[in-house]
Image 1: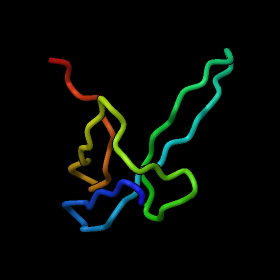
Image 2: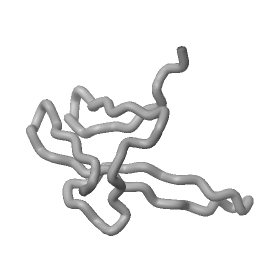
Image 3: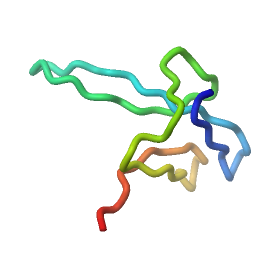
Image 4: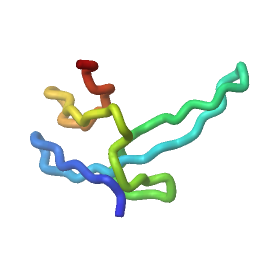
Length: 69
C-alpha cells in the first residue's frame, strides 16, 4: 500500500513515489514525488527526516526535509 496524503484544498488523494536518478558525475540520488495514481515506483512509508506540507495556492503536496533540532 503506497503512502498517501489528501489535499486540504481539493480533497484529492496523492501517492508518494521514489525514483533513483543517476547524475552526470555518476552519483545516484533519489527523487521523491507525488502522483494522483499509484504506480510501480510507489513507496509504502515516508522517508526518515522528511515531512509533508502543502502548497497553499495549488493544494499540491510537497515533501520537505524536517527541521533539525
